[in-house]
Image (cartoon, helix red, strand yellow):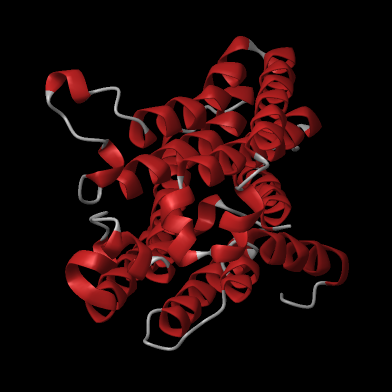
Length: 275
């Protein structure tokens, strides 16, 4: 269920990106993003079995014995996604391949022959690579369809990069015990949950500074941008503490953020209740 929720959220996130660009969303690219997200997170379940045995025993139990089935689904989903992107143009297909390449690079030991450890085990590298790969997908799929405003493009890249980085680190907070036992150097492992909370709040505050000069670029989306920033503060404060939060609450409130934001946008567009 969590993979489907994350995939639906990826679709909604891309839809909102199209709105920020002022473009009509391309259905094939929306479904391609859904499939890429599903495939990537299915593969992630396979590569993170050791960590999940501590952090998420239910998911680890599901993966054990279903490796072939999950691998098959992931491969078929990614092939279908790449074809959907190719039907748009070759650049869309290449953009959709970025998460796959990134996942291979940071999850495996392909650089071990050069004496470089698995990038996932290098401090901050995993968070930055995951954030960058999804930012490229979400920002550049609409951009390759039609974007002549570089300021708007850079603004959207910055917005989604910060939001994605915050969300990635929040899940590291949830996984801190398993990561510590497996010697994975995440931000929460290195600086603690309290230090992580202040870091994420500082990054979230950068979005407030970002929004002020570019506010007029996103007609029709300003209210949702404001709500998204406020919402980010709330879930940082909620999850970055010592309470024992459930994985399902993190999945719904954080991984479901863009489903919520697109729903609010749709309600506001129909009824004008937020304007």
